[in-house]
Length: 174
Image (cartoon, rainbow, N blue to C red):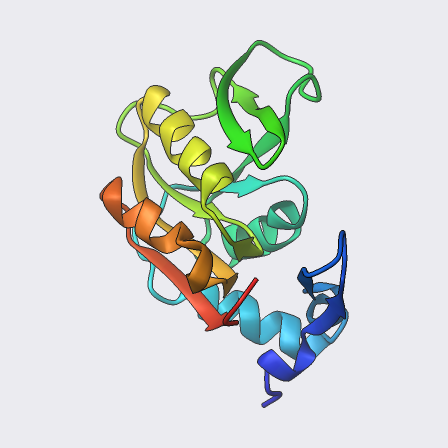
């Protein structure tokens, strides 16, 4: 079995000085590592009726996890990218506000939804995903990530919403 953490490329000073960017594309490019990551991300979750993947790497992981769990997939996209009627949720970025959206009919009331993304940092996007799923009537079964940056508090932010987060690895700092 590969060392999954060893498959993550770290890029210093990207996208700006002082940031250590954790690049999961090197893990995704390793067939055995990708398969293992999907298996480990899905393992804690049973009875999930759909996976909500956050654009863009959450689509790659979320589709594979939905297949593994035998359920559907719901894309959570940036504003204006979906072709049908949508509902959206704002979230705060370091330098402003953004919105993620989903089709208004993508989730039915009471459906158990697993939120998926590659990394959780401050948790703003994940929090928006939780709020969007709940506004649509869905029940958040949990949230799963490859990487948690615990110093930035994203998992604590999810816990404050009553959502259990799961990550395959952590990297200290940011």
